[in-house]
Amino acid sequence: MSKQIIEIESFNPYESRFPNRKLVTRETLILMKYLREEGYEVKVLPDNDQPIEILYKKGLADFFADPVFIALIGIPIGIITTIVSNKIQKLIDSGNKKEKINQDHLIIQIDNSTHNYLGEKFLNEKKHKIKKKCKELKDGFAKCFEIISPKSEFPTPIFLEHKPQIIGWCSLYADDKGLKAKGIITDKIIKKRIKQKRLNGMSVTGIAKITECSICKKSYVECNHVAGNDYGDKSCYNTIIETDYVETSIVKEPINSQCLVSMK
Image (cartoon, rainbow, N blue to C red):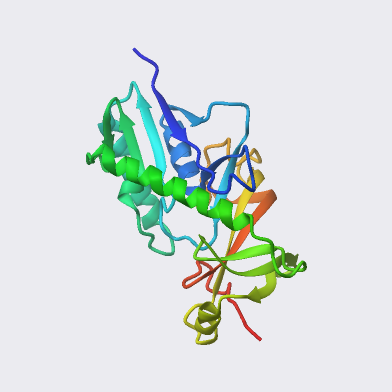
């Protein structure tokens, strides 16, 4: 019997500012945990000595908002799509807030055939188009990170909806109530929308470098426990011990309803 391997491509849209980082999103990591639990060997590409780190975006509610590319080696497509679709649906059904799934952003490649996570085939042209959008996103952030803030006290760019469009600048700090940002909005249209309460949520993107699972006390990246699930009489959560903050975004609908923007 041939070795059954699943290869998942890492994706770092912030390569210009945080180079040589092997990043997977929260959703991708959960997928990896489920597949490992089923007995499959999961490799994150590139296959080098860089550690796997979690890219989290607090303001994104969609599963696979960033595309995920998977290659199956020695595994029938039907087995994987059944496991993945069942696990994802169960995860969504158990959540407090219904999340949408971008079906075409979980791209499964087997031999010369490309599928979404439901097992439906789609043309390679669609995959190439998604790859092109990934490159455009990376290039867009690279250009944004070349821009210097007009105020030295606010060095961190503020983006719109986690897209490479700078609308202001801020500094991040933490107090006993959590992470906060103080800064300026430079985009006049966005400033008007904030004053009108049409756009008043705040969200952050970060790279979790060191994490700990509450169940096994091991690295959350390496264990198979899933945050939000119960194991016996204990609920699993992921503690982020060390992180790099990437950017702050103004969003229309923050996941945390208390994460709001006020303007003086």
